[in-house]
Length: 243
Figure (cartoon, rainbow, N blue to C red):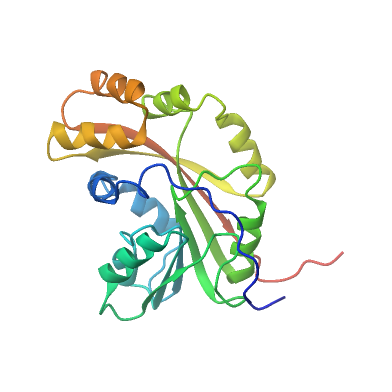
């Protein structure tokens, strides 16, 4: 196995939301998983207490303090420099937390240095993300877990809005991809809860085109959204299997 070294940086696909509207994405982050069931499902599959965590595509570091409350160490990895600076400001003074600028395909970490590699709606995995998966596998210790948390593009209503804007997204093909790569996948139903309609509609406006955002607002009553996630996990073997 190789240790991390600097090389030509892979191309990074810009995020369509947090790169442009980090303040609104903060509101979105605070609204997500209001029931806490997503965090509970993640902990059941890979408890991070006392362990070393890497958060890929950490954005402005929203989840880093949540991991740091119990983890031994937390490293956030984010390719976009303005978000790196925001994340560093968020966790300044928090023991055991570091933020590094890099893409998922080139993690600035040594081999076998993490127990949990976490990526939450950082980018949509599927065919073509193999380099990122290989890097996650490289930095995991034997017995460590990669956990990918994605919005479920096949569920209603949120998935319907996603596909309206991106009809090329094929939920069945994405699921098949993860099955081929030996991930366990489970659905997690939760709620996004906003303080008011203005916040909800503003977040819809950064997630969807104007037309689809208007449709989503019409189809949503009150200040909550039912949202389904797919939690996908794969544990790195602790031993090598030989014929």
